[in-house]
Every structure is written in structure tokens, then in C-alpha cells.
Length: 173
Image (cartoon, rainbow, N blue to C red; front, top):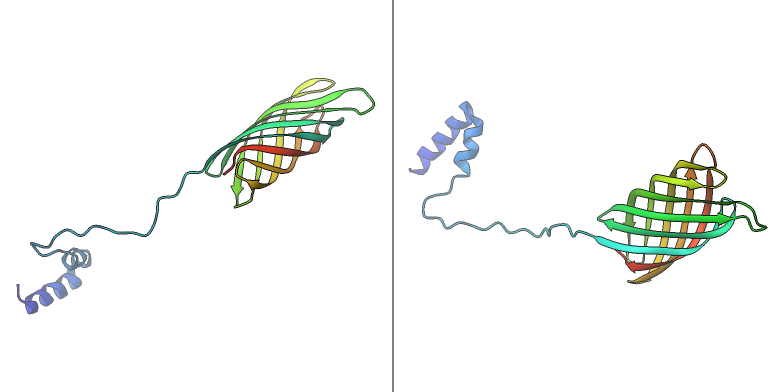
């Protein structure tokens, strides 16, 4: 088809059917080899990590300890935790066992996360509660770090909160 006829055809399509013009303009002449699509974009890397936190805690009834195991896939975080505190001068023990879900973000030398879930609180009575925690850890090594976990449990019988300074071991994000 000569160029003048192509131009007239394109103008006609533009006036009467604009969507057909796009098909006409993008048509590839016969005999043209296929062109592969090249992109600089890489598919997003899936982040998977697993670690444990172990350390002393203060809160609830007094001093105690905090132990948790966390699994991260991209920015999703699943944590199982056990917190126990005991009155320093003897008395009641207060703690919880919980499963939490939250979000986590990691940088070159650390990570931060927040999570909440469902747990069992043991103290003067046993009840169901809402465990919450916020983690901030410095990870100078790929397999270990040191940080702080703020924890709490919201429940009708014995709500409590505390802080743990813990060693973090595992494959960090």
C-alpha cells in the first residue's frame, strides 16, 4: 500500500474508529522478525527469614524472661511467644503464651516489627487475651543481633506490659 493510501486510511480510522487506529499503527509488516521484550525490572525478591529472641524481661508482676520464635515472608511476620514474669519478692507469676501476626521491615543492619494475636494468660486466673509486641533489633551479623521487645497483653482479668532485652539468633532478612 503506498504511503498516501496509508495516510488516508489512518485519517479515516481516526475519524470513525479511534481504537482501530491503534491496531493499524502497531501492525508489524510481514517478514519482520519478532522482537523480544527486554526489561530492566527484576522480579521482586521473596524475603524469608526465621529467628528466635531470648532474654530477660521486666513487666507484669516483676522480673522474668521473654522467648519468641518468628518467621518472616516478605513483610508478613508470624510469631509464637512465651513471656513469664514473677514478683521479685515472691508471689504470683504472670505471663502468656501467644501466636501473633504482624508486619516487619528490615534494613541492612536491623529490623523492626509490630504484631498482635491471640494468647492464653496465666496468673491469678487463666484467661484469653490479645498479645501485642513491638520489636527493634540491631543485627551487625547475618545470624545474630541484640534488641528490645516491648510486649503486652490486653485482657479483662490481668492486662500487663513489659520490656525485654534479648539476643536474636537466626537467619535475618
